[in-house]
Each structure stands twice: as C-alpha cells, then as structure tokens.
Length: 174
Image 1 (cartoon, rainbow, N blue to C red):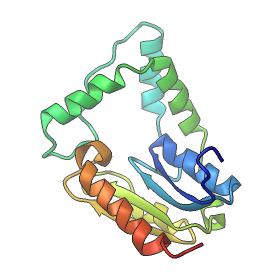
Image 2 (cartoon, rainbow, N blue to C red):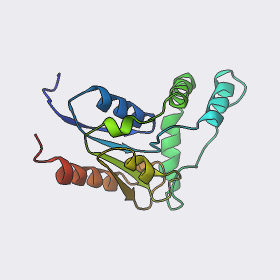
Image 3 (cartoon, rainbow, N blue to C red):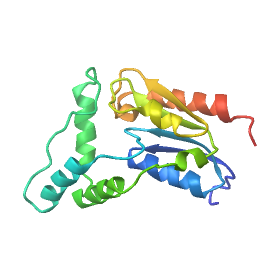
Image 4 (cartoon, one colour):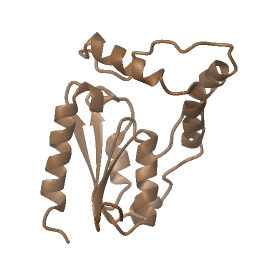
C-alpha cells in the first residue's frame, strides 16, 4: 500500500523463504516468489538450536563457520558475512531457528498459483528441484560457483537470474 504496488515479486532467503510462502498463501498481491539460500519444505535445525541455546546461555561462543559456501568462494566473502552475522543478537537468531523448526510447507505449495523460482547454489545441499515441484507453477534454477549463500557469493548472477524470471514468467501478466 505504502508504495502503491498492486502486485509484487517477493524474494525470500532461508527462513525468509518460508515467510514469502506464507505471504503468497495469504495475499492476492503476490505476482511471483523467488526462494533461495537453503529454502526448504521443512527445516532440520536442531543442531543449530542446541548450539545457539548454549551461546545465549553464555556456555559457548560463536564459531567461525565456512559451511554452506562453494569451495571457490574467496575467504574475504565468508569472513565479511560472518562479521555481519555476529552483529545479530544470538537470541534473535535462536528465535528464527525455532520458528524454522516449527514450519513446514506441507501441501500448501500446490495452493499457490503465482510462479515460484527456487534458486540453489551449485554446491548447495538439499533438493531444491523437489521443493520447486511442490508448487503448482514452480521452477528451479542453479547458480554456478555458489553454495547455500549464493546471494553473497554470486550476487550479480542471482540478480540476473531473478530479472530473467521476472521478464520471462511475469512481465505481460496483469
């Protein structure tokens, strides 16, 4: 409403992908969805919850984590990302992981008629193609030389892919 938009494309990464799905389920203003960054039909985050619980209780500290990146990702990129991540209060991250643990796509995907693009990095674990298939109008794309964090590893490729999705699948629709 604030921007005068009648239709929009929503991009969600990780837990944001689940939020985007919920938004598409409840709003008629969603023209398309782009889900990436570990987007999944459900999230297995028990180990992260356990680790974050120790951190928030003061019994552990945040450790540098290089998992989820492509082997070719330059050290400076994931070091910068880690530096940004530690700026977030671990209690907020713990709440996010608990919400992820309690969310599941279930059969909701078939009810979403908007086009959905599920993007995954070439080195990302999980089955993004299966997630895309859970939507009535889903497709899957892969970002080369990226892992789960394609948006920071290959931002130009992600932007180009999203722009192509909008041009190919959404432009001309009213």
